[in-house]
Image 1 (cartoon, rainbow, N blue to C red):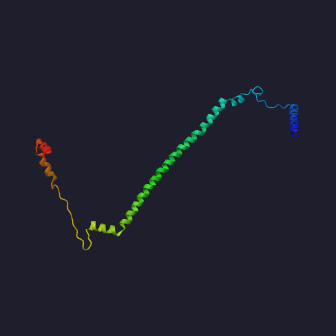
Image 2 (tube, rainbow, N blue to C red):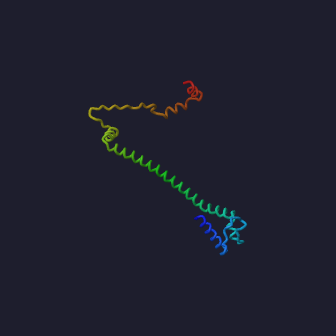
Image 3 (tube, rainbow, N blue to C red):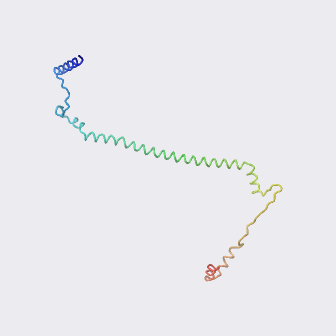
Length: 159
């Protein structure tokens, strides 16, 4: 019964379409009416649409590439600044440790011993002096100038 009703409904739809001169869509290329308008032909051309799409992509990609390169530069600068901050923090930490050491009693005692030649009670101070190699270097240089060249070579290779 439902099938009969569907067939009747379909038949009624077809009759009303024919009376009102509705035409069903034709899927073949021959049945479609193409207007002979310049703009219609232009916008329906695949070549034109490809060119418009390419221009659209270029308009979007150039600013995008510029923005990306600026972003990379900024990220590099941020990384460099972070490294510089870490270096300054390390120097700051070392300076704080130096300040703590210089304020300690050990540093005070060491500076008193070195600068003022002080000693603790009961300590003995031993001073070691360096030997002086030559008291007058000008005199030895002038004495070598008096020696002839052959003697200098002899002394250089065999003594």
